[in-house]
Structure formats: structure tokens, C-alpha cells
Image (cartoon, one colour):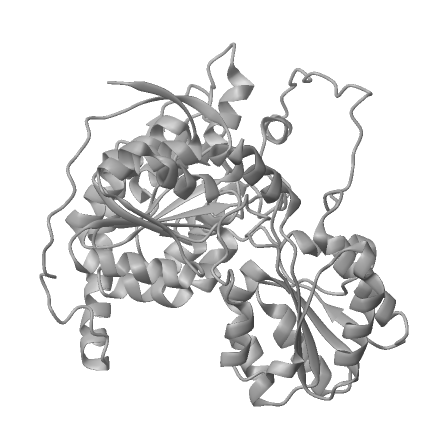
Length: 528
């Protein structure tokens, strides 16, 4: 079969196409974005009639995929780890209704390269009581998509598929499998399973509990979970996903002397782990993320032997796993890598030269400088870098700017200003604005409209060309929805407009509109 050089993200996307996937519904979030982008751009996917959509947020994306599964087809939804919080409702209920043919890919971000936290998605999968897959390399990332759909359809469950940043954004050769046809349209086997009235929900939840032994048996018998014998049984090593590769980097010229259990499928393979515990004097747990395995094995293996890992900070609990950290835990010398050249210097992230957000923030700063106690509540996007311009005071989560501004205004903060991007407004800002209107909050909401979801690579914004109409529909007075063009020549005029809306006692929306320069250059290049 054909062999391709693919990112981990691309391997998952190609496998989705090859494994008979019918629809992929996602919201862009680094490091998961390239999965859906690959399918959107794939000529092969278009020829097969595969649906590939960017949705308003992760919740609507997963709900669309559940609809695809209802029709008997194979679906995938991709997101970053914090996006799983947004779709927590359909995620938990998809497990209860026994959704077949759905893989939920969640890209975690240890070390927070582009995220607010290091949340480990395995806790969500365990909470939902569904099988989880965690590949250790690009070939496994590809193969596990085929396996994940087979597992889902055989056991009647959605599958959580976890990857970290390093696997998502590194390349390796991947051998493709023979392409599979898409599933035909069918009706659900249990017509009541998609109706979560209490009477049905109680029965379905009991069914999910009863499936747990089958999920564990599948994990025990999976060829993806492996036990490697070792000669030195003073220590046993439990490793998962990409952390297995980091371990092996410490033994490129020799064989690891310690017994190893490599975990890439959950629930945990208890028989393998019990064998390792019985054979070895102590255990070291290596996992890229939070101490998920470590916490769980302490619960069922007992307290007779020492278990080391992130929980006891043999390896620091925060940050990305790597070969050097493992070498230190093993008390093993490791050859240093190539030094960073002196010409390479650290540079804090900054807004692009000529970015429209700079002019918007300059105008906003000029107004806020006149108010000693005023606050500007920020949001998630490129414009979060306004913090470096001393233009925003907070960034918490998607959509929080508007609702935080509302709450602060109601207890006396004035002026209380929210700054949110057009993409984030479409994702989770609209409901907050509706709350402001309903409560007649004294807030100014600045919706930075650069025509695109810029931070994640230029995906279309769900609110594109609709922001004013959405605000009017939510009840904002039309005369207090103000459009401005963020350019240096318009600075004085923009300051005046912001001042006028700050002075208004009610809900105001200001929409600075100018296309993202990166996106504009891309379009100009395409026209050539």
C-alpha cells in the first residue's frame, strides 16, 4: 500500500478518509486543527462525498456527529482539550446512548504551548466510562482510527482518541490500509436509545455500566497494549502513548533492562499491570500529561510497593514529558543535544505588524486612561496579545469577556468593557450578550472583526458578515451598535465613538472591522 510522510494530525485525517468516514465536524483548536483542514482540502475526500465542516463551537460539532451516527454512518469530531469542556453535555450523553461509529479526537497540550491549562482528557473519558485510545506514533495514529471504529461499532460506544501536541505536529512515514466503503444509511437498532427521558436514561446508563467488563476485556486483548519482559526487575515501567518513545530514546544503543507495560488503549489493562506489580520491586509511571495512570494504579494495586511518577514529582507534575526528564528519573546519563545558536533569541509573542487589533487597542487605551477604576475583560484569540499593550486585564476562557464584564459592572466596575473576536463571539459570546441585554447591563462590548478565525490558521468565522444583525436580533439598540475602521488616521474619531458608548448607560457594541493582514496577503496571493 501507499506510504506517506504525515503529521500525526494528518495520519488521523487520512485514516478517517480510508476507514469509511462520512462526516467530520469540528471547531479549530491547536493542536487539533490540521485534522479537519486536511479532510477539507483532500481531493479524495471530495470525490467520496465526505462532509467536512467547521462548526460554531465544539458542542454543535459533536452534536452534528451524533446525528451522523444516528443515521448509521461513521463520524469524527476534533478539538483541543479545553474544547472538550465546551461539549461536555453531548459528550457524556453520547456515552449513555451508546453512540456507535463516533471517534472524538482530543488534542491535549502539555506545557501549554497555545492553551490556558494542561487539562488531561483521559479524565473525561474515564468519567464518561468509554474506551480511550492514545497512539504512540504516527503509524499507530493511523491504524487506531480503523480499530477505533471497529471497537465503537462492536461494543456500542463512542471512543475518545487522545493525542498530545508533539504527536499531532511531528511527521513520520505512514503506510495506508486498503480503503473501506462508507456505511449505508440505517436506523438505530434501539429506537428509544436516542431519547433520554428519565425512564430510558436509567436503562441506558445501566447498560453502559454493564458494558464495562467488555471494554476492559477489549483493552486486555488489544495488540496495542503490550508487555515487554526485562531482566532487571528492581524496577517496572508503565508508559503510555508518546511517552513510550521518550523512554526508548534513552536506550538507542542498548535494550531497556526493565520490564515495561506500554498502554495505548483504556480502560487500563489490569492483568498486565498486576503482572508487572508482582514481578518488580518498584514502579515508575511515565505519561505525557497529568498522573492519570499513576492515580488509578494506586487504587487497585495496593500500597505495598513504591510507585513513582508525576504524582510524587519524581517527574515534575507540570510540563511536557521528554527524554531528558525520563533519563533523570532513571538516574541515567543522556548525551546533550545540539546547543541553541547564539543568533537565536527568545522573543515574546506579539501582534503582527499592521494588525488591525493594534489600532483598536490604541483607541481603547486612550479612552480607558481617563478612568482610574475601569477594566477591560479580554478573551481567547490573537487579540489576547493585547495584554502586552496593557489593553486587557483578564483572559479566562472562550466567551468569558462579555459575561465577566457584565458581572463586574453589576457590582460597580465602571467602565466595564469586553473585548472579543468575531470567531469567539460566534463560538460562545452571543449568549453572554443576550444576558447583558436581558439584565440591561452597563457594558461596552468590542467585537474585533478581522473576517476570520485568525489564531488557529484562518478558518472561516461563523459570525462572518452577520455580527450587526446578530446583535440587533439579541436586542441591542441599533443606534448603540457602532462600526469603526481601526486605522491610525481614524484614531481620533474612534476614540470619540468609544467615549460616547462608555457614557451611555446600557449595552453598547462597537465593531472595529478590518481584515487580518495575514489573511489578506493570502487572498492577494491566490488572486495572482
